[in-house]
Length: 124
Image: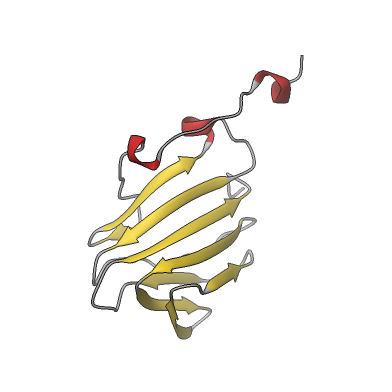
C-alpha cells in the first residue's frame, strides 16, 4: 500500500484548531494551520487562515521554492512585494512566486483576515 493510500480524508471545524503566532509574525498576527502535515497529513500543501489585528504584520521574507496565494476575506492592509507596496482588501487575491520578497501588514481599522495557501510544504 502506498503512503497516499494510507492517508485519510478529513473534515475539521475551524474552531478545533488553535490560533498560533508563527515565527516572524508580530503584534497579533495569528494563524490557524488547518491543513499541514501535523494537522491533516498533507504532503504538498499548507492551508491556513490568518487574522491580523491592527498594526500586526509578518516581517519581509523570501521563499526559495514555495509559491503562495493569499485571499483576503475581510479588512484591509498593505502588501509589500519586491519593494512595491499596495493596499489589499476584501476579495483581493495575491499570487507570490518563489524569490519575491514579501510581507503583509494590517494598516486598517479592523482585523485583516485572509487565507494563505503555500506549496510545497518545505522551502528547500
